[in-house]
Amino acid sequence: MVNFRIILSYTLNLFFGLLYPTWKSVEAVESKSHTDDAQWLSYWIIYTLLLVVETLLWPALKWVPLYGELKAVLLAWLVLPHTKGATYLYENYVGPGFHKLKAEARKVPALQKLLDGDTPKTT
Image (cartoon, rainbow, N blue to C red; front, side, top):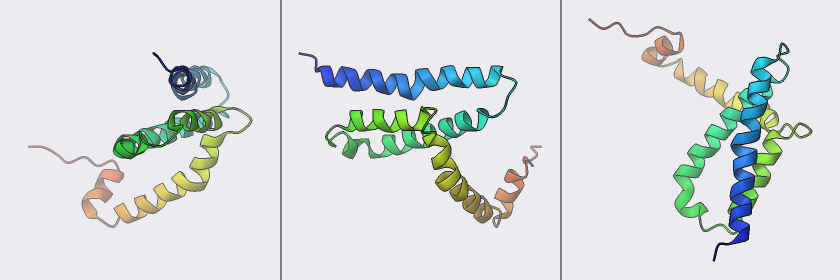
């Protein structure tokens, strides 16, 4: 028998994780205003990081009780207009972490050229 809770969490994760953000991202691209662009770019960055972490930790996460429901709540917090969780996470954690990582990467000559947009020439 199919578990209703699993179907509900899967549906909520699909809606809050992909369908709603895709719709809002298309609206942001189509609008003349750029105020919502940062929210949706931040969301897709956070969502990608979440997928990477989830993929790496899945053997442990599948044993966490109510993981699907907790993920749905997190995704809703990230995307809903009155919470703007993705913007909050990006501005307070991901952005500063990225800037620190980029500063460290610039200390490596090969990475510095890559970060500056210089691509190696092939002969």
